[in-house]
Image (cartoon, rainbow, N blue to C red; front, side, top):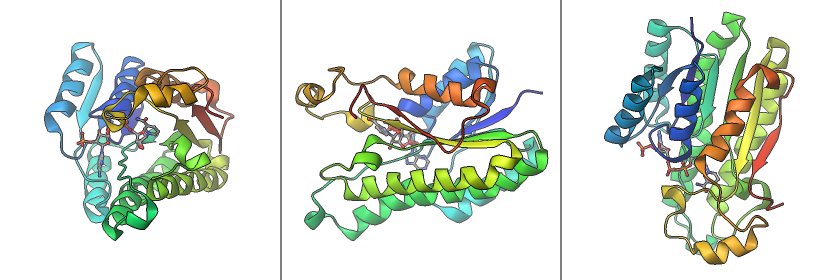
Length: 241
Ligand code: NAP
């Protein structure tokens, strides 16, 4: 029986590449999305056409009750997850004095509360399965170094890193690893419209990263070769520091 893995925000960008890669490696992938059904369906269709196994599971990770009810029903029907990739995330940037309470709340609720909302219903079924497991959070260079205009986003990602490290300690004896991948600037819709040439000058590798370059690290962490790595944050940022 193939191992199950859930990818939140698997419809586009980095999450899409993670879903395609893990499905190609034989994982039974569940693709979560929030609003872009057509794009999620396209990822599902590609996986199926390449001989993989996948299904869609829409919910807003910021909605605690909805997330729990969808995940409880999913586990009841399909069994526990071996892997959870907490990838869904948003940003809403502005200088801090101009940052509204809504901007603060929506980013924290999606990026940080989303971790609790998704992982909490899944963790005990994963423990009870006694097969070990993998939990991977997608943080950000912004959560490690800070970034102008991203006080909310940076706080959410720094919080995610703290949650990752602490949960790693709690689950280590169960052979469940918990790690974080911290991308720098990656070519997705999230970074569209940014002054790429100006930003690239600040990156030692002088270019943005590709979603496939993040997915490759997630794939490594999901594999048997990473079974003794836990509580780590792996940067994928072209040498940003
Ligand atoms: P993206 O292209 O904007 O895609 C975001 C994905 O998250 C979409 O699949 C979206 O679903 C989903 N999503 C957003 N809010 C959601 C919610 N409330 N519930 C469920 N799903 C939700 O972003 P990306 O660049 O691939 O980013 C993926 C992750 O990497 C994020 O956590 C981001 O913070 C992190 N990251 C990105 C970069 C970068 O440079 N791109 C750098 C560092 C970290 P819908 O399609 O349904 O809207």
